[in-house]
Length: 174
Image 1: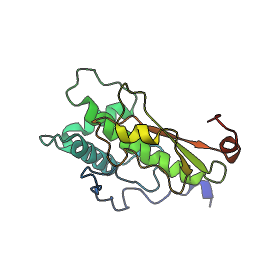
Image 2 (image 1 turned 30 degrees about the vertical axis):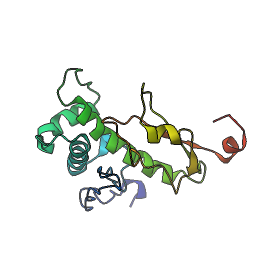
Image 3 (image 1 turned 90 degrees about the vertical axis):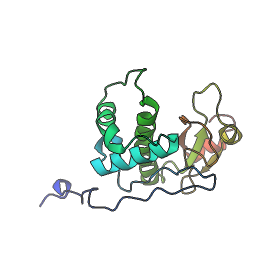
């Protein structure tokens, strides 16, 4: 009856992506089609993000079930204690969900914001690959896969932002 009340097919029904291994031997973050906000990730998407973060950080003694409660707390707005033993792993799992949602939003808004700029995270010592690509602008379709292939950081804080065509034409404004 009302189009806005129709419930979209649950993301739980979609098959979860396999965790791919990049050319550098490190796992590539999962892509969750349809996810627009990391807060609305399903349990299976959260488990896949945790599994990726465990592999990225090379913490083999953990399972996703060990960290799902902590990720749920982080997504609900509660900060993790600095001394939490798996804070970086949980943070990278949240980042995987956030990056997948951001990528989906970027593709949705690419008519208005057709360009994506890669930026180095607020780290004291970023990885070599990120420093080489800082401020690199590409079309949204090409995008930037974060963490970059060849990244050697345990917690990647690099990010992207979308730009308009007018911003691209202005020198040194982006």
